[in-house]
Image 1 (cartoon, helix red, strand yellow):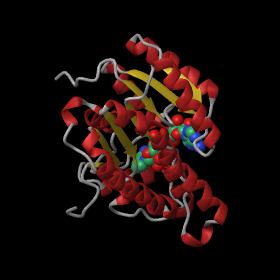
Image 2 (cartoon, rainbow, N blue to C red):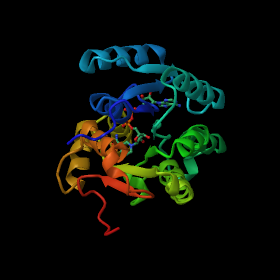
Image 3 (cartoon, rainbow, N blue to C red):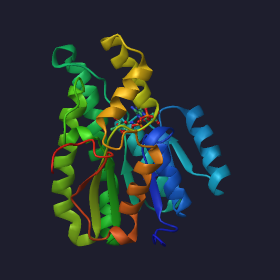
Length: 263
Ligand code: NAD
């Protein structure tokens, strides 16, 4: 199927590794002009070189700490300058610090708020006006299955990601008439560095090995396995496509059945 987004420009945040990186690759495979960003220049250079090797086009990259407003502004400015605009905005971020309610300081809450919610709001403020002008655009936020079913000891993620869901739904209502869609993806357990670190962290709490923790995670999932980052990425690319033109204000779970609720 031709997804109809060849030549569109896409900015994917937090994309040197993991799910963000897989999304950047999937969009590059569809012929999009892709921009990647994260905090570490060396990791970005390595990711850009590998993407060029796989798909023949080198992505634009920008060093960007999602907690810094200046970095966000510079990144958007630089991508707009090089691509002439941004048609597809994928708001991904690093996972916030784990912790039970008594373990989290005001500073942890503030950091997580800036990374998980405010960074997406800031990117949208900078890219949506042009999308409205061009009467076409796609905003896709990568959240977590925690927005449907809170995950133990992930207080910050469980709380702040639902703020982003509320923001997206409200924004989608405001801008749907301009053919700008806003959707969220809620991944379940996906095999990336993040899940590995979570498993190591949980293993310490539970006096188990991280391998045992990963096996226990898989047992919670009806599909009995974790997702690959590519399985999340292809759903994102579909939401970015011309065929997803009538889907907006939604949160799509990519979780192998992990969420046991009906909605
Ligand atoms: P990952 O750790 O593999 O990759 C995270 C990326 O974010 C990296 O490129 C890292 O450099 C970048 N990053 C981290 N902090 C940043 C910052 N302040 N500014 C800019 N870039 C930053 O993580 P992942 O597993 O790919 O997860 C991506 C998102 O999806 C996270 O928010 C995570 O919580 C969420 N998620 C992951 C899973 C999972 O099982 N992997 C499940 C549900 C939700």
